[in-house]
Amino acid sequence: MTTFDTPAGSAGPVDHLDVARALSEQLPRFGRLIHALKAQQAENRDHAALVLLYPLVRMGPLRQGALAELVHSDPSTISRHVASLVERGLVTRVADESDGRASRLVVTDTGHATLEQLTADREAYLARVTAGWSRDDLQAFTTLFKRFLDDLSATLPVDTACLPTTPEEKQ
Image (tube, rainbow, N blue to C red; front, side, top):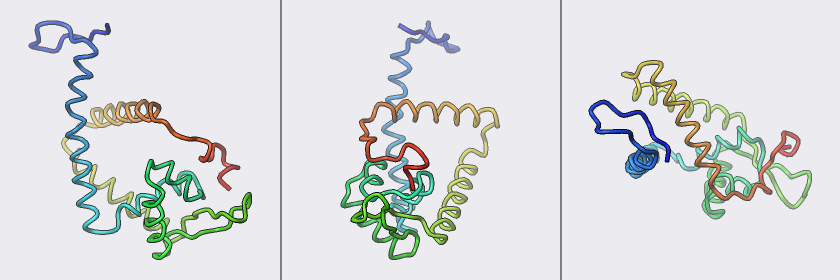
């Protein structure tokens, strides 16, 4: 059993399971807060569709099915969101060179500008939320949160066959 340093005022060492249990108790709250933030954003714009711009820019042109797999979403939901993005001129469909029957989704210049604004808005919001934090606390949290998300992601079953793994596969 892994133990941690004794917190000030506690009777003895804390084991790993106790700390994991405390984290487990915070996850439902985190989920509710994320849900509330998504609901708040949805009031202002079609945020669910706009979120798809992030992986399309990061990964490059993707087939719609690969995008659905990447974001762990139902293909019919992704289809509706992609239709909205295409209609708004944020994404366009281009023929897939490897299969002429299929298409890949490509972010347009307008889509890139929209994503830049979304990113700036998110960064400003997080800067406000963490304004009372020291730089060291924010850096430590960011590092540990990334590690947590990476480890959590590694436990999820993902069919990587449909996702590009090299820059050449993205094109």
